Image (cartoon, rainbow, N blue to C red; front, side):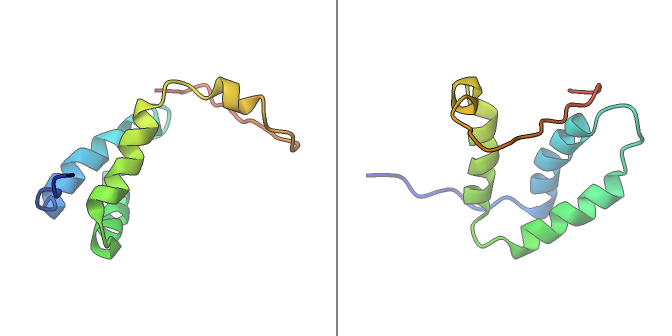
Length: 87
């Protein structure tokens, strides 16, 4: 039997987990506007019905072991943009 999830994190705990991720994804070329991302994540936190489910999507994406084999199955015309500032 699956165990029930623990209590939802507080807003500050949630922000402490999310803002470093956004900072890393943002790169170093332009200044990182923490206030803008804080407001965006606070809205997501307030709207979420199940925060753990939302966080699971982030964890699943981070745990993925590569998607190159899946990319070969794409048959639609596709444009891939890649910046020079990847984390």
